Image (cartoon, rainbow, N blue to C red):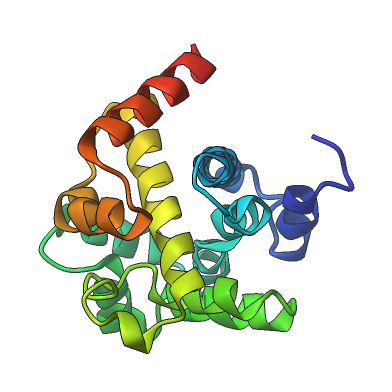
Length: 194
């Protein structure tokens, strides 16, 4: 990785030199690349914004890891509790969550409003139900990123993604993808990574 690339700058700014966060940053970079590709397949897809969103969407996690010694336990608890968003578990234990912290970081970096707003709402399971309350481009970034994370979980980690089960149909609807188009996109992604 080049030291001038956006992901390296982000890592350095958020304390990403810790070896324990290497997997986190690798995952963020992979999701960003997948999201960028997905965006390129959508008419007027926001490819650069999707990449940036993929890098930044969970940037609050390493910050909260540095702030709270028991934050890894919080993540483990949130991962086991598929009945509610991970941000609810975080908020219960730490009076904040990674989406809120990520939103503040994105605002501090003067990222476009759609990216900032998308980061803030990316774990809200109702975000696609009240489309008038969230910027449409933020919804598109959330949808693209949700699909990218689902693909990463399914293909690279070989595990299910409970969030996809809750919002997958709404994501496809928002992006205007039929089931067969989604399957074709998955096949394209699989071919890229083989």
